Every structure is written in C-alpha cells, then in structure tokens.
Length: 426
Image (cartoon, rainbow, N blue to C red; front, side, top):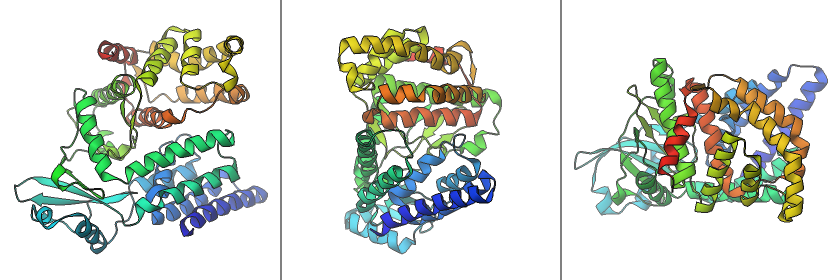
C-alpha cells in the first residue's frame, strides 16, 4: 500500500495546489510547475509502472500545460540508476555459472536508467560488444498496485470522460501491457517477432543474445545511434527522410503485420545522419488481430475518400460505437447524425494530411483545429461511442509518432506511404 499511498497523496497535493493557486489568483503555469516537480520526484523515486505512466503523459507535451510537461519530460532522461551491487544480485539470481562465463567484462556504471530497469555495457569472450538490461528488484510485483492507484486517481479527479466500465477496460489493457514490459523473456520474443514481421527499409533492430536472456535480463548487441536531439541539427531533407521512414514503418505495423511497437518516446529511437533508424526497447509491443487490421485499413481508406458510411461501419465492427448501435436501424440513424461530425473532424485533420504533399508536421494547426472541433462535439461522442481497449496502445503508437514527427519538423507525403503499404497488405 505504500506505493498506492504515494500516488494518491501526490494527486491530493496536486488538486490542493491548483485550488489554492486559483483562490490566490496566481497564473496557471506557475501552479502546474509545482505540480510537475512533485510528480517528477514521486514517480522517479518509485520507478516501475508508476514512472512509466508519467513518461507516457510526458509524450503529449503540446497538450499538457508547459509547467507540467517540462518536469514530466525529465522522466525520459533523468532516471537515477540503482547501485550496481543491487543489480548484480539480480544477475546472480538469473544467470548460471555457464552464462556468467560468457561475459568478459561488465561495466558497473549504468549506461542508462529507465522505469523498469537499467542498462550496462559489457563485452563477451567472443569479442561482441553488448548491452545488458537488468530489471529493478520488485518492479514486476508492483504493477497491479500502481495501476490500481492510477484508477483511483482517475476516478477521483475525473481525468477521463468515460464511464466506469470503459475505464476498467482501459486499465486492464494498461495492466496487461505493463506486466509484459517487466518480463524480459517476453521482450525477447517481441524483438524476434518484430525482426521477422515488421521489417521496413532503413529500420534496424539490435540483435539479441538469446543465450543470456532471462525473465529479468535482456542482452542485445551494442547498436549505438544519435538521439533525436542530434537529429534536430540535421539538414531538413534528412529529417524528412527520417520522418518518412518512421511513418512508413508505423503504417506497416498497424495496417499489415499487426506487430506494433507501442512505446514511441524519442529515447527509443536512434536517428542516423544517413536516414537510417535504429529501434530500441521492445517491452511494449501490441499484436493486432487480422480483423482489427482489416477494419483500420477500411477506416484509413474511408477518411481518405470521405466514405462516411464505410467509416461508421468499420468503427462499429471495432467496437467503437455504443451498444445501442447493435440494432441496425439505430446504427443507420446514428450514421445520419454522425456523418457531419465525421466530415468536420476530417476537414480539421486528416484532409490536410492527404492534401498537402508533403505535409509539414511542424505545422501545429492540424492538432489545434482537431482539438477545437473535438471539443465542440464532445457530448455527442460521449453518448454514442466507447473506448476500444485492444487498440489503446495502437492509439499510443499513432499519437506518439505524430509528436515525434512534429518534433523532427519532418515533411512527409502521407498518401504515397499509404499507397506503398497497401501494395504489401493482404
């Protein structure tokens, strides 16, 4: 209960600070800055799923108040490593004598620290340079408690405009994915699956060293690459190439292969000056069913060609309409009511993606206009739609890549990529 108490107390302090600031007439960003620092300290100390949730929130920097977004963004890069003595105890419990015998040198200074574990460089006796990712002690046992605390906080603060049953479904999906992220044997399986099924020109995956991988240890060959901060200094045409490669790779995953890398924060991508992309961290990979891929291809085509009836039916087949839509007559009436809203959302967002070739992701009007239209329609959508838990992390992948391409300032010909992906679709 100590972890739940920390999350809930941070939530109570946040609401108290914001209410007090409002009474004192202080500026909103000053209040959010204090809240953000509190959450940074709380979640950074806790590690595990709690810190992961903070990292997820930080990806939406343009949506959050700046004072809140900046401290949460530090969770992506300022995690404090555990002492090596603690991590060596994990290795000793996971590796046999024969496995240890393969390691010539292991650097006790962490190369990087994150929410679930930390990474150390090593060299094997066969000469290979590798990285060893070691899970923090106790992290796997804390997922249920952290997600339960998140649910209490969301209900208390009414942070999502969905009913209790829909929120339970979303939290179940979050819990399942986070539990998978703590199992590095599962991550090895996902890395191997992505290598086989989600190949895309110019996108590279580090090779695993399967003989040294366990439930709490993942070893891959050393595959260094420049960060997004370095990539921001590249020539515009290189950033365009990187953005095109990232979006093509994502569309292939979502619409064709069904293996989706669903943790798209910038630290999980190495961006080379020659336009290649190296992908890291395969703990959160979502396998999308054949039926869901088919319906999402239908939605992409409907948005592109203004087929509102096709869009409506595909949304229903995915489970995105209210249960009342199970009645065909009601579904038809709902189509008449929602068609103007589909049209308005497309005009604010996807029409621009398809018409401007290339589309400049640095242009913030797309998200601003889409938000404005969505706010105007919010009551209608709440009455007639519901979340689709199996696609929650697909949504995370799509939105995360949007912000990544926006940060890069990439210009991408979206219709050309959709056509390229359609050629390899079943």
